[in-house]
Image (cartoon, rainbow, N blue to C red; front, side, top):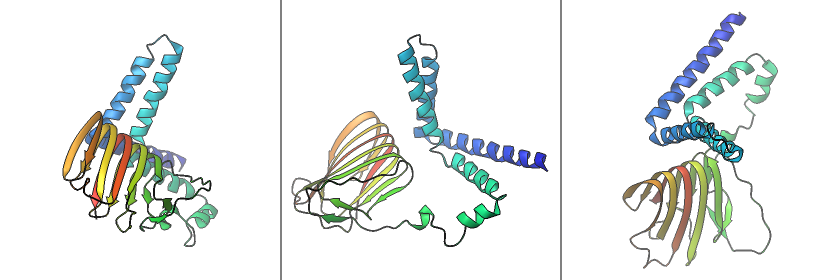
Amino acid sequence: MRKNRFILILFIIAIGMFLTGFQLFTNHHLLYLFVLGIIFVGIAVQLKNRFIRTNGLFFGILMILLSVFSTWGIWLAGSILIVYGLSYGRKLIKKYFSDDSEWIWKKKRYVSVKLKEPSDRFETQRQEWIGVQKIGKDTFEWDDINISHLMGDTIIDLGNTVLPNEQNTIMIRKGIGRIRVIVPIGVGVKLSHNAFIGEAKFDGQQLELKNETITMYSERFESSHKKINIISSVLVGEIEVIEA
């Protein structure tokens, strides 16, 4: 019986490795990051300087881990293993899989951003490191949308928002993933985007970036009374600005 369980676990791990490898080789962004991480590690282990070697190994391993954990194969295999492990604990299953349990995906909502007048009070807002991040349920001061995200998709919906007659700023910094900004029709948009490896889709244009910084303006930017200045940077991923 134990042997069968061990074989099943090995089979799940093998499937996860296969799916992870398949997605790496079919997604050139993740493949570039994975190969770059291997190159960093390969060069670092041959260096004599301890400081440079340690930092090279750190960044190389970090790139490899980020690329691998950005695939759904590794998460699928991990999820199956977790469920399989929990299947032997009825109390855990009853606690975490009951109908009244509050899982994160049950709490997700999609609403528009609510703006408020700037205030002088001190405020701290904690942000998620990994996962799908939908900005819309929170309240931001209109001149202070500042987002940091390590991995996953970031969605900022301003489609149903009445913006003030001034230039509004959105700052986004992330490691790996996709950024989508939904702006109201008729609002002038300035996009300043930096990417190590990625793409930018803006105003009907699609650009591929390789360690480049671009600045683009919408067609009606100068004549628009309401303007949005999007400043973003990403290690690997794409940004898309959508009018809605």
